[in-house]
Amino acid sequence: MLEAKSTQRALVRIGYDGRVHKQFLGPKAEERFNNECLILRYLETRRCPFVPRLLAADPTNLEIVTSNCGSRVEHLSETRVKELFAELETFGVRHDDAFLRNVTYRASDGRFCIIDFEFSSIIETSAGRTVQADGKELVSLDTATQPRQIAWSAMTHPGNFRSNNEDRFLLMLGDKRGVRYLGKNGTASSADGDLIFAVADGMGGERSGELAGKIAIEQITRMMPTTYLLNDEHLIEASPAILKTLFQSIHAELERLGSYDSACTNMGSTLTLIWIHRSIAMFAHIGDTRLYRIRRTGDESSKGYQLAQISEDHTFVGWLRRTGQINERQARFHPRKNVLSRALGAGHQFVEPHCGTLELQPGDRLILCSDGVIDGLWDHALLD
Picture: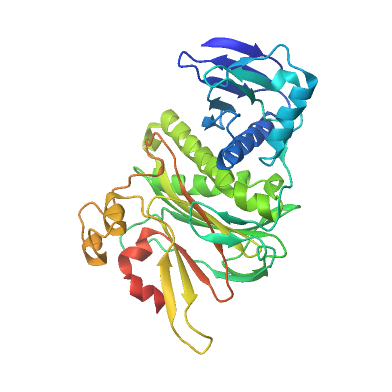
């Protein structure tokens, strides 16, 4: 690779395919790495056309790979530079190093671009809009600030056939002071802080599956930083980017351990996570652990409830059922029902979690569970 820049803060190289490899160095390197990943993913959700696209991120080596935005610009009027960075702010990001050194020219479309977002921040834009996340549920920002009283209960059991338990769960509350673990049962108001619930199911030889589930949960605790406590609008918009970065970090850690220790080869984990901010539940999911929502139907006198599976099973059988080619009974007895198409680690090359956003209504119930629960209960039994 061709070395393009080497400073105390970063080493930038250009690959033979034209992609840009940037390794963060020096003080606060991890913080700057996380911030640039967040900003680039956020700008991608905003479809900003004149910034790099984040193609890969390695949190172990603090290195990102991005698309190439052309060569640096040597001469440009001060007025034009200001116009460029002002245009960036219309996409919700302020560059804190808004100078010519961070402007490039992309000859393929004749466009000036902006690069190097390690020093940048998400800013206030218009309020009260409705945001549609990957989960395809519309969320009203007018009600997003209304807190909810949340009650929870959690348990895990190895079952009757295994001596070890590869399932893990996490209950956590985060605010500006940091994070703290919650008990297996309890209640809290989302006005007091963000609530994070997660279920992971490890897989792999010997005891590596149990270790994989544990690593997934530990990474969540380490990487849900308080700097991501944005205002309501930007948190909703940026949540897919934040959660994708988190999942990629877990994936990279599992792959790293698998390459160093033969006992951990093909170690992997599923993961389903809910992040509750006031009345908004942001989720991310990969594998065949599941997220369900139970919601009351009809008026208050009605005893009817509706069960909806929010997560998508990342299996071939799950796809067959989603597309209506098989029913629940056929899915349960299909010989390939446990063959995953997506997971963290386990030798998978790409990580693309299913992310989305839900607006919580009073009385809603959310269920996060591993396949051990699903194998023993039909969908209708979850309502009982």
